[in-house]
Image (cartoon, rainbow over all chains, first blue to last red; front, side, top):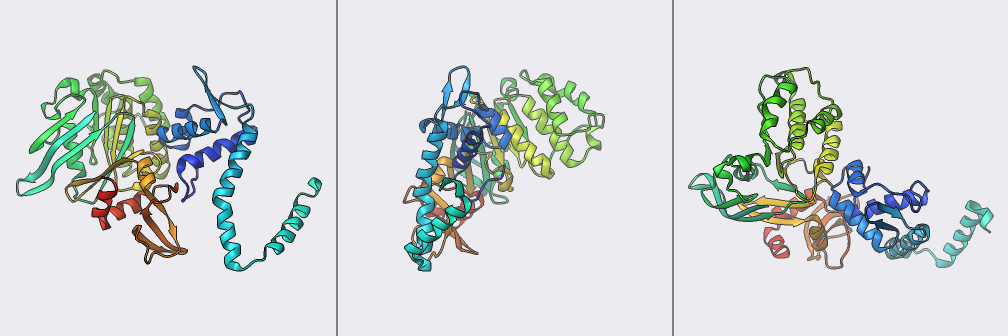
Length: 126
Length: 277
């Protein structure tokens, strides 16, 4: 697995797991790979993967059934979107704000462009 | 599981490699040991394995004193040295000679590793390339299931696919009762595999912490400028400013860069000691 340079590995693994769930590869209720199996698969220390599973359990995205293993929660999709939104607002948005401030881009221009973008890319949702 | 108490060692009394070293390592972790050439990494590992004896202080491994080389100790520890010497026999013969020394040796496990690592079983060990010999020894070491596994520069000589296999096998071999200690210069080979780091520098242990703790206290990322920034411990110019190591005052979460961490220790030993005291 390719890891990005900047972000903590356990969070990058969390992103990977969320993606598998969102893509429907790991449907709710079905067993997902064990800590050991996933660690070996992505060549990472099992303690790091354990931290990811604890983290996702704290967010109620996955849960652990004793003797069975981990599965995605019934409401995993919703919770992943909440978590991703929270992360976007906390980390990526400030970066974006910084850029538009430094480049002197008007907020109204952004609004026009955003609306045009949605219209072109996602015409059916309009 | 491994405990060093005020351990001193050197090849002559006037020229000590390390003095009054205290170190405590626990099972369930893969420790990475870093240090400059000649810092004494291999000597430290050999002291733990009972191949060299401390000049002063006490070493306790699994409740035994390595120096005494008791059979009960030797059957629960495996050490892969950097330079390896294997007898002129086939893999099968090596197995029948060596496996009986290790009560927890698992032959099926060994056969699986050998197949996965693509080692030609029919050849004599001496007829193999350096990398292949190393892989035989790594496969053997993992199959002994000893509680302590020490490897000195294990990825030296391994080709690109084997390094990836190495990480996979070692990751799968870790369990809560086992301690793995790996020394290396090739920090990139061990990225994400180790969860705790030991840095030996200037006869002292500068850092011995889990990478989680390192990431809590230090931040690793690019900074647009470093002037007047007192948090910075190490920096090097990059395309977007500076790649830096700095004190993590805002609880930022970043990925530990072992190379930069090592450089920060070399450049700012006093401040690093304070941060990790």
